[in-house]
Length: 350
Image (cartoon, rainbow, N blue to C red; front, side):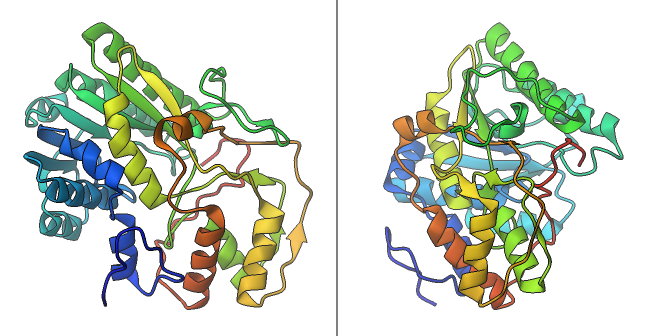
């Protein structure tokens, strides 16, 4: 199929090939930002859900800018096919056990780093491993890449829940969340902040809340429940999302905003979405009756990303478009990753 031209967004996404193209399509601003990078861009932990499309976007932006930039993805790569797809996109790969400090020390030099390592699901069963991955690995990587410019993925879960009527947490709010996972994420930030300050490493901590695309995310969870006729629990009554293509473009641009001491920035869409209204909209788009359970709680995990929009401008894709894309994709039986987000979880147990 012919890919949509630059700046054109389709009414529907036909298949995974079209989805991957759209997720990795760089904006003119991202092309310009990547074009200013030199040497090596290392994407640490880039073999997961977001990393491959971010890598492809970086390669496309590099090629369109004509930049002399090596893109290197570091991961354990339990699925060898991911390595092949990244190589086909123009990236190099390195397999590494990031818990092994000697293996991390042997990684190639890189002046630019996107840090994507994290463990969320399975925390309740393996809290020690969660803390090791979320706090020990960043120490290894920060030591290896001291002085390199770094954009590190974090999460909006580092904040407490806020009143549902509010615009959400801002970057200066205290980090006192509930649960082992969220607290280990605070630990990750504090470790990275420490090395940013002591080693002069320019760093931006990207508090993402939540990335969505057709194969996983809050909207997929809701659409599948609507299609299956399951009740929608609205206790977690509000949430934020951001199209993953906009996540990729934003993070690559935020590399240029890295500072020492580290800067934290919230990254999400401008809309505060109602669980009830979003599910009802999905039901309308798919011709399904929607049943609800519970009542909206007084608090929710919400983030105010006004600062990101001041720096980067508005996202390319708004929530209504992603809702329409998701409804059609799920109704047509499009493939998913089978990884529920558990966004309704309010006690921090994952």
